[in-house]
Image 1: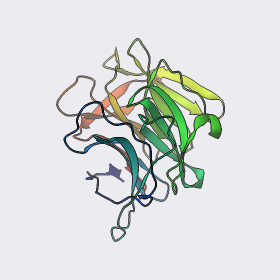
Image 2: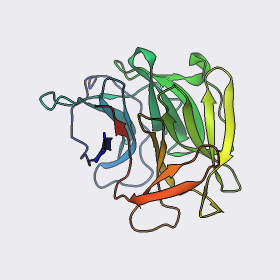
Image 3: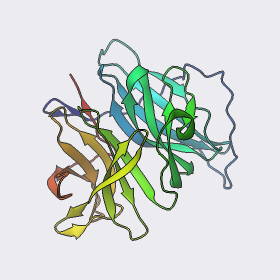
Length: 247
């Protein structure tokens, strides 16, 4: 997480969801899960400065996704909402970006974090997941992998996608029309594979990625040239997800 020019780390808090009485359908895990396993799949920041964490939890009973909201006001405790309305019980939210009306566009895996993927609208207050077909979002290619979303200050939504050839490509999401490919991603003049973990855009419009193209012990922070697709190393960065906060 970056606050202005300051790099900061954040531990995801344990919170009680605001809609805890809402029943959701779960598919029991095929193998025993000794304890709750949680995966941070996304960090993003709303225009009002609220940090939104997406957490996927897996237990013996199945998998569930919740959003955690952390206000920039330190005196205000975080709150959380669990999500429902997925295409099936194995669906997870892998990335999201804020849109108007205090809602989100989410990247949904319908197969436990693997393809196929689809876009959906997520309601902030209720946790309802509305399919892309019912909210006017473009259909994603079911044969491609999709990893992360990011939104620029001018409203442009970027997405990273990987085809069967294993090369990561930067594309734009045009709501209502489709996905437009921009450029393949490269590092040191070599195609980038599946090593891109998180994408974010600075308040000035620079595109940053958390990636691990050489599969090292620690991830690294890169800046992306959206015209050429070239990644330039900034520094090693021991984190799972990144975002900028607008404070």
